[in-house]
Image (cartoon, helix red, strand yellow):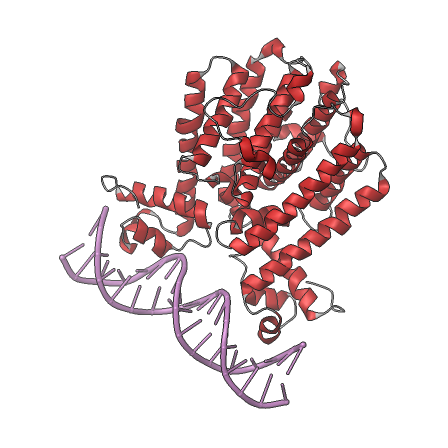
Length: 223
Length: 223
DNA sequence: GTCTATACCCTGATAGAC
DNA sequence: GTCTATCAGGGTATAGAC
């Protein structure tokens, strides 16, 4: 259910985004979207000629949410580029936990489902992922000589994005953020090693604690 | 199309596995499965009371394919535990490239789609992923003192599985194995660092080449 | 175990008044 | 822009002969 004082078009999009995340695109009927968005069939097809057009609008909507809800705040609150990367992880985690994503990224769900069936949507999703990877890569370059000069910045950025998305998949499958937290902890260790801090403590799971905003990491071994 | 000299049940399962991977579960109709498996509606519902029962059989079928096509061969051909892990990656890559998966793991697709809608299937998929993670963890422990004693074996195993699955997602989205290759190369670097081989060369993208069976890594920068 | 025929429902999409 | 009513088609699943 979506607050009333918005435009019908906006309500349709945000409602659909939520339903697509939870149920998938194919399993979400137009009728359900219309009902939960407090709209009607006439309104729907006035704004979107077909269901697939709504899907494209939803992808853009999601990309915007990631920008305003994760990337921009992370850039605001941290001046150190590497710390900014892990702030992104932390804000992502918050979205998964308390925020609207409740254990599942809308991008991951859509990517897996529509890759083969909707070429246009696939291309748009690939663009969004590339932009995320590009952001991370830029941060890695800004870290300058803190990272090895021979580092493959683009490759590491791709690893980061792939790992996070895979971790979201694992978290959803296990109904637990434990896989996500484990992945973040390992990425931290990797970054520490790259920064040549090779003390034995850095390799232990709690070598560097998860940022303070992410308290729950106790049960991650149960995965 | 599936070869004839098999049982109808087996043909239905393998055909469905392929269609689910390509189109997704919801978007694959029972009629299509029946048609492409050279079966009939009567046969289908004789073996499977409902479509969801077929889905469970498909999950088991896929898990078996991974065992016989990836994990077992990797164990046979390599005696070094860490090398065995990367052999697993390489065999996975071959399946994505030449093998039946053609740019998309059936497990990844199903995981993303059915997590929320089919609790029983979700639980079964989680088991399969846990078994993969357990295999990797066992290999890491067998590596003994080559890895830091304080290493969190389970966490690293989870990272590996999450990263591979995320990389498969990226590869599918980009219609290219480049994201997959980039992820593997970074994992290799991470493992090298953990083994205390911190030469500058180890950080470069081609620091340690991908195994000989995976020639195509030239275009990975284009992602 | 396999076949044909079919029931029944829900889907995306349309028509036309307001 | 919004509404109601409705369509045509494909969805899963069943019945009953062979």
